[in-house]
Length: 450
Image 1 (cartoon, rainbow, N blue to C red):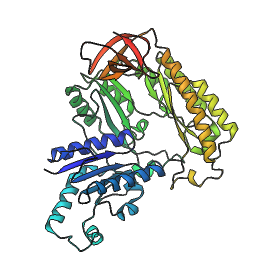
Image 2 (cartoon, rainbow, N blue to C red):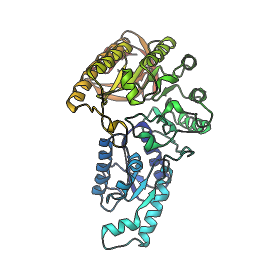
Image 3 (cartoon, rainbow, N blue to C red):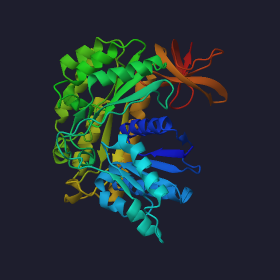
C-alpha cells in the first residue's frame, strides 16, 4: 500500500478540493499520512492569490521532495495555472495538475508509476529522468464553455460543519486580482449533484453546511439557475439544521433575496459581504461593481429582514493611489456600517494584474500603519457586536471539548458565528443546545450557561 500526504494552501474552495482528492486516493488504496511523515506521494494544492502565496507554494513543493527525494510530488491548483512554465522547470515537481483537472489525480499517478516501473524514463541523471517522466494535466482555464469539475465529499475534516463547493471561476476581473486567470470563467455545479452531496453529508450526521465558491453570487448565470433557488433546495434536505453562505457580492442582496432568506429557518444570519474599500474613488480603481451607497443599502436590507445579523467583510489597506483623504473615507464608512468582523489585508502587488502597473504605489510603512489602524477598529467593533448577546438566550451547535481557562468546556457557535464555551457533564459533540450567554471566558469566547 502506497502512502500519500496532502497539504492545502489558500481558500475554502481549495480546502474542499483537497479533501476530495484525499478521498479519491483513499478509494484507490492509498494510506493517508501526515505531511510531515515520509510518503510515496505528496499532493500540494497550491494558491496563487498573491506573490507570497506563489512563494509558499514553491516552498511546500520543495519541502515535500526534501521529506522523501524518491517520492512523487504533485503540484495542483492555482499556482500551476498562473506559473505553468515555472512549475514545469521545478525539479521538485513530478506531476502538474491544473484547475478543472483535479479529478485526474489518480490516473496521473497510475500513469507515472507505470512509466517509472517499466523503466522507460530511466536515465543517468535526475534531469533527463524528469523530462521523460513529468506528467501534466493542465488546460487553458480561460477557455469559455468548460464544465464544472464534479468533485464530491462523503465526509468533511470538520466534525459538524461541511463546506460544499457549488461554483467555480469568476468573471469580475477586479484590478488587483489574479483569480479569474487561475480559476477561469464562471461554472456552476448542477443543483441535483449539490443536493445528492448534502443528503449524503446529512446521513453521515452533519447538521450544518456552508455553500461556497470562487464567486458564489454568480451561481447559475451559466446555466439559467440562481443562488436563491439552490439555497431553497438545500433548505429542504432533512437532517440539515443550519445553512451558511460563503462570500457574497452586495448587489445580490435585494429585498426579494433577503426576505426569502429570512423566511427559511435554517439560514444563519451571518453574511460576508465583500467590500475592499469604503471610498468610491478607490472602488472604481479596483474595478469593483458597486458604490458605497449600494453597499450600505444591502446592509440596511439585511438588518431590516434579520434581527442583529452578523455582517463581515474584507478590506484592503493601501491600494495604489489611496490618499489619506480616501483612507479616512474608508475608515468612517466602516464605522458607519459597524461590522461584526473585518478581515484586513495590506495591498499586495500581484504580477499579471492591472493594479501591479498602477502609478502611486503606497509605501510599505504606510500600508502597515493603515492596516494596523483598521485592525484596531475591527477588534473594537467585533467586541461590541458580541457583547450584545450577553444576557440573551441563544442556540449553539457544539463542536468539540477543549481545555479553556483551566477547565474542560465544550465549544461551539451561535447562528451568528459567535464562539461560546459551556461546561457540561454530558457529551455535547455535534449537538444543538440553547442556553444563556452570561459573559466572557476569554477575549473571543463567551460563556454559556445551559
